[in-house]
Length: 343
Ligand SMILES: [Zn+2]
Ligand SMILES: [Zn+2]
Image 1 (tube, protein in one colour):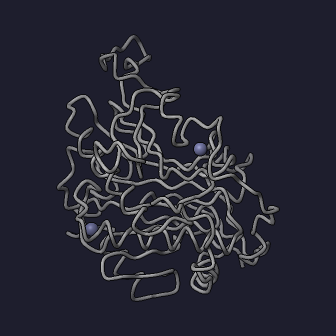
Image 2: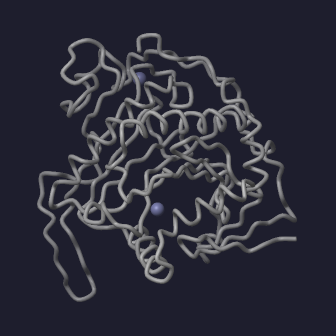
């Protein structure tokens, strides 16, 4: 029978439509294999084309004149600008803030043909290390209230350039979605005296049915009230509100967990378009006991239609428990191939 399930964090309802349930493997993209060159002359993110991007912000290894492993640049088509001040104005019902912010691109690898699912864990750890550095640096700017780090992989996930990269946008406001989650988490903390995320993670580990993989420091799981098929959350087992507090050991561990989850999706669903985003407390809440950072991976396997737009309620045709079982059984090591030889 169909079920309505409520998301523990957001209180949003989803319909798990078991009547039209799909087997997880039915969502594989069936995309014909594409030959992508390791270097593309016209790609501004490929090595040798550094002059085609705005001036570099930083690189890893820092200050190296040799080939970089990770590079950070301003987004050439930035959504926000750091050249203006976040002046606020309110006229009748119209509230505005000047378009202040930072919009950066993190180039994952010099290899044009690769993607994060195919990179060595050590390279994913370098990227996460760069995320931490940029996150913490931008969080100290008193004009910044929230930093979002995300990946768009594939056209349906919003990627306009194929070269593997992530992005960071720092905004002068706290997005209402983030504010809503913070309020729900605070209200649970006040009522129950515990972090709702720690509580949920403990129960999910006991239950096992939605767990994809677990290490000493992280757990990856399918979301109980998942709005879309294969929505996967990765939680640190140590309570921390802010991604900026991630330790060196956690970076190494998360690199392996994230890369494995991405590789399982890559193999099991044949390289689906996907987004991932780091959900972290805004900087002023970085030591909050009620919020817990996590990483959310959302494959783009379905499209939003009228019902979703009209109600904000999603219909998911894959049982999260079936998705978890499917992913547990996919061998991530089959995602071999274009690993950059220069790393
Ligand atoms: Zn490229
Ligand atoms: Zn917690």
